[in-house]
Length: 182
Image 1: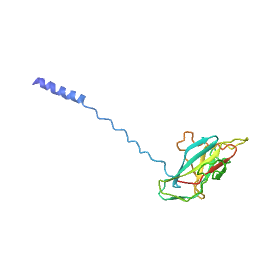
Image 2: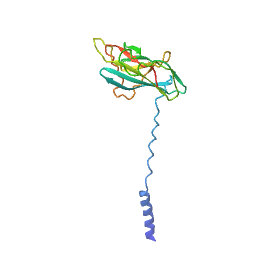
Image 3: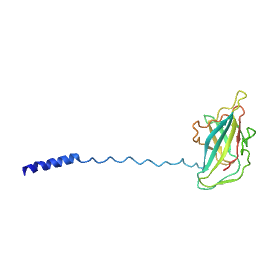
Image 4: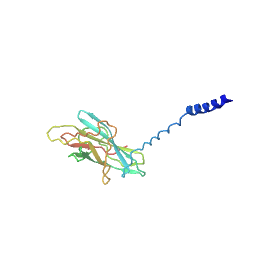
């Protein structure tokens, strides 16, 4: 009996020491990713990839209705090309290709569009990086847009282009804009 008197407490101590420790608390759940908040205007404008060839540049801008109501467009957006300090550059913005180049569909007349929530319309910008004289306008690093006359101005989001926005209109100082289309 004395043997068991010694063995039983030893077993209890051994099992207490060998007991599994309490598992650590699980890490906090990652916060769900939330899309960028919808601006008060009800639309978000994002730049697509820019295309360049032989001095001709074309940049798509995508307007997405992120609001709850239908959004109506008819015509051309208003644009401001901004320098690194956010100041407007002296750039003439013209509707259609303005003789910059002949690109299919660029001079198609505007048609009224109604975007339901989640739908997207596109416009394109076209310019030439032609430098024929000194004193060319600076290089635009960002854009501000009003989707139509009377609509609020808002920044254009840079999108996925690794180079960001780079609007180098050269000494022509001219930017052609296509009408909104689906």
